[in-house]
Amino acid sequence: MLSQAEENYLKEIYALGEETHELLSTNSIAKKMKTKASSATDMLQKLSNKGLVDYTKYKGARLSRKGETIAMTIVRKHRLWETFLVEKLGYNWDEVHDIAEQLEHIQSKTLTNRLDAFLEYPTRDPHGHPIPNINGKIVTSESIILADLNINEEGILIGVKDASDNFLKYLNKINITIGDNIKILDIEPFDNSFTISSDTKQITISGNVAKNLYIKNQ
Amino acid sequence: MLSQAEENYLKEIYALGEETHELLSTNSIAKKMKTKASSATDMLQKLSNKGLVDYTKYKGARLSRKGETIAMTIVRKHRLWETFLVEKLGYNWDEVHDIAEQLEHIQSKTLTNRLDAFLEYPTRDPHGHPIPNINGKIVTSESIILADLNINEEGILIGVKDASDNFLKYLNKINITIGDNIKILDIEPFDNSFTISSDTKQITISGNVAKNLYIKNQ
DNA sequence: CCCATTTTTTAGATAAGCCTAAAAATATTT
DNA sequence: AAATATTTTTAGGCTTATCTAAAAAATGGG
Ligand SMILES: [Mn+2]
Ligand SMILES: [Mn+2]
Ligand SMILES: [Mn+2]
Ligand SMILES: [Mn+2]
Image 1 (tube, chains in turn red, blue, orange, yellow):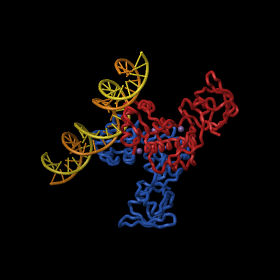
Image 2: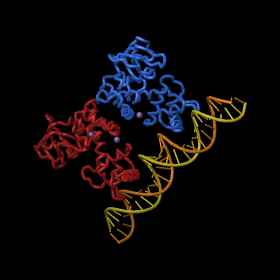
Image 3: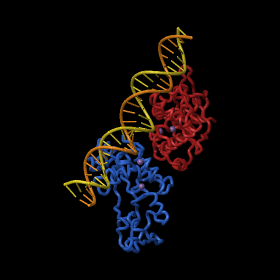
Image 4: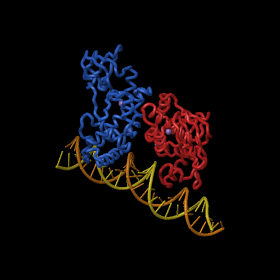
């Protein structure tokens, strides 16, 4: 059985490496864990001894097959609990992360799957992030980044890349939610900002914001 | 913020002292925590420094006012989560303790109360144990022990005192559940066993079992 | 390719929570 | 009331996860 600290490391190493699957630097892992590089080194050595990461001194680390499997179970639990908190307890999408951060560590062979069933097998969490299934596999429709759309193209907002408090609160403020139909009206080459219509309203968002919105690939 | 270990101690000290409110010996606390007396001493010193127990070296300990308040919030969480697991996720009453043992430590100002509302403010958990309300107060109808009833008296089973796996599985086996209408048919003075009718069926239980069943005081 | 800078690892400390063994206090017997 | 037994505390160790400071390795500009 892994400690909460070990599980948190595995999950964040997964998040960091998800896209590139490259070796990750000790520093990048330490930063993600909000800790010091020396602490990250300690943990990488421990996880390496347990066969959960492939780690070479001074080179970097990535999850092993076994480590990735465990990381997926934690991601699954995190996202299912977030879904529970929003769907069943009425929380907002910007309120659930810290609670799920704790709930993801509950150890029970059956709990996760019963929760999954209770929620009727959701495929995405409140931030639109895909929920791994019981086998740890992600099976969801592909998505693209809003910033990659051209003028006059449109699609449904299915998720956010950055799920930080600040970003979610910003989206609340400009009244953009998952499920909105978004159409690109204009792209300003000068600052790369996007003018979009979302359902009825029309707004302008920065290129940075546009890079953090996932649109259903249709 | 208290550690899980500290919270577990407070909760078990509460459970031990609930009835008598007497000073508790280090040994009794150690036994309840399934740990060594020296470890219990360490913890009692720490809790005493934090003002959560009143502790006198070589004499014993009891919860302080402040410690009891905290203990009640943990008991509340434990029992609400057990109720959730049975009512919403379909667990049996003998399967939920270990999971609730973990869930009771989730820290969130709002979660417990939202869960309470979601469950429609239950007053008893799946074992019939009273659930403290948002103010930490227990407000439930009084109950008496089945063993205190006389021949021909009857009442509704509202809870069990011992909620151990073994006892719950025994009750499953003899088909006794909370809500059953139980009537005392005979009490055998020789071994203090009780012959009872529970709904339609008629069975004999030991005096020990009878001492662990709570009947609604009517 | 060398030297300075940056990154990473190691060394040594600390705090929590547990342990065993020994010492101290208390309780029980005779 | 002494001797013995039991209970409780203390002393000292271990593990996990963190930190700071120092050492070692890697990197990159000239
Ligand atoms: Mn976490
Ligand atoms: Mn999420
Ligand atoms: Mn617990
Ligand atoms: Mn219970």
